[in-house]
Image (tube, rainbow over all chains, first blue to last red; front, side):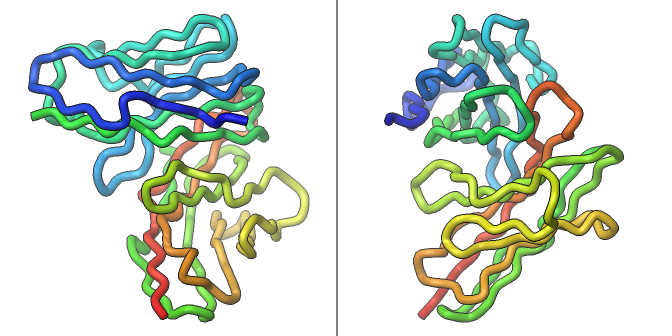
Length: 115
Length: 115
């Protein structure tokens, strides 16, 4: 079956603009995660969704970052008033359940460049 | 603070030689441990994971890892590497007592296999 897909694959924007990144999880996966990977660094957890429960937003770096997910479908990550330090690869992952023993399946990422 | 240390940013090795990629973690509670691989221009893929039981874990593509609780390590090994193993390898963990899999990643080790 299809894996996790993300769009766009690349996004170049100007400082101060808003951007929206999209993630399509694997069908039937209830858990969805967003991560950020800055150049030369590991992945940083941003936000987690599980079904219709309130998301865990503990990793969002500032109030310019927000994300939505309707049920167990598509999720969008929005960055308002982008800054140069937001330049990174944004990765989405989904898993069948939220259990720690489950496997997260990652999408190919969206490379964001803020000029 | 919880963290993962991958001391080697890059490991060059010749084809058919053995390799070990080091990973140490810091956590005050019990954890689940993971190794992910990222091939060029592809998303992250799970290599193997340790949840409980035997400390020696076997994964895909001939890789294995050993959990050492006293040394808080989870080193990845392969007895004979192939050119196709050239990729970036990420060690990660999550706390085993939380309701979801909030992964903490290392900064990655780039494995370069040459003929």
